[in-house]
Length: 145
Image (cartoon, rainbow, N blue to C red; front, side, top):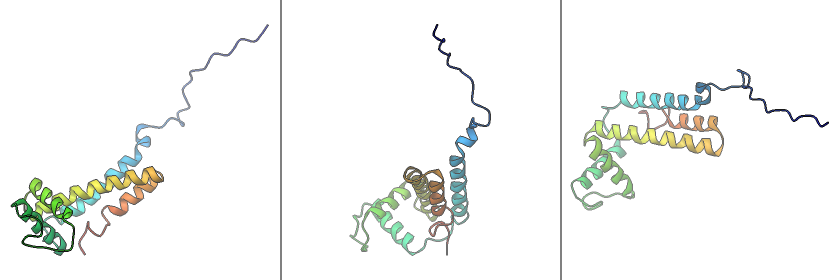
């Protein structure tokens, strides 16, 4: 007589093998901390006057919001895309120093998340976090010299 096939066991894995929700999502928690640190640096400096390039970009963006085409009154050797971005930021957050810096905070946060996702896809989660942290609060644009 042939032996009976064994029924598939439905045992749960040992507790040390099961990942908790926090352990499975640790990289998102660390990314959140990086974003908060970058925001803390930027918010602390939110009323600081615009530096030279920021002022130029904001002025050209302001002219675009007033209906003046790029390079009609003021011009530079830079492409008009950055001026359009600044115009969009100022349309959303206001045509003030605080508005420009809030727009940059949002742009910086989006960049940090995208760099994390790219690093995670190309290498792994840790590499993505390291790349995002390098772009985060310690980056040249986040703090003032």
